[in-house]
Image (cartoon, rainbow, N blue to C red; front, top):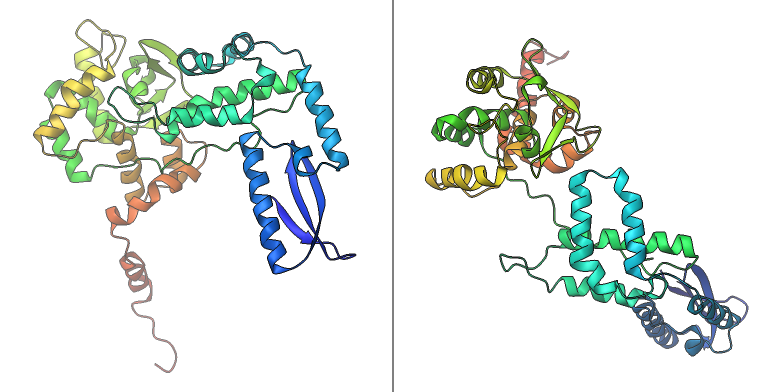
Length: 392
């Protein structure tokens, strides 16, 4: 953060800012007065803007400064730096990182490279890409529209920028230059879209849904399983004796994969409703590999189920259109409303800590449980009903 201060020895204003990771202090010839502070502040604002855009020229602002010569020499060295094309280094980086990614994530990064990053930066030397070009590219993403004619969301733009940041930072580390991504922060993203169903809505949905999907949605609503988890659920992961569902794998693009994180690998306790639903389902698909599947035993296609079963049902019941993922949010809020231990809920959801649980869901609990102080009032009455202080 740039600032100014007056030097005690001569009362002259000093400019203090950071450039290319180095602290820079330059004394002006101006005395510390209100008018001069305004002038220096305008200069500071201009310097910060130019640094952000990658157009700052140290020698132009401070021609006699020793630091101007230092930065000039750094620039000359970087101009003579022999770095590969972005396209070549990006492929090297992708090949090296691929081994530690899930297939679905690798596919997403591949699409990001092919669809956005390589067309924009592919023919540029990776060491000559400027901060201004990175910011210009990000700004251009805000003008891109999706198939539904909507602009890319800040979250989607951040996901596109993440591989670019990783590539540029890795190249800077290997070829010894300052990453142009330094100082660029992610766009602010709105709070997670959480619209849980009320308990009476859940009951209505389960009562009115197609009979062959009644057990499917019962399990979704009362276990909090992700779509890829329940669609990839296999019978060998259902333990009726212990009344547990072992979440070991998911299905993404028709391919069975390991769970998203170590925390996602978990055992979900069956409530009686879930136990009964899975017992009924076992009679229908117990001789198949997948718990919920098509007639020929293949796993469900979540897009197909959403379009042909879920959304038509919500329209029929005159309920607000919500993504199927809201069944997971519903489970969390109902568990919280019932007073279950937050640590237990976090384990059921596959969260490593309770932090996300409280950050995302706690605001819905008062509406579901009517936490208006009456519970505390009942506690006092049950324990202090006959209590009379001395002298009362």
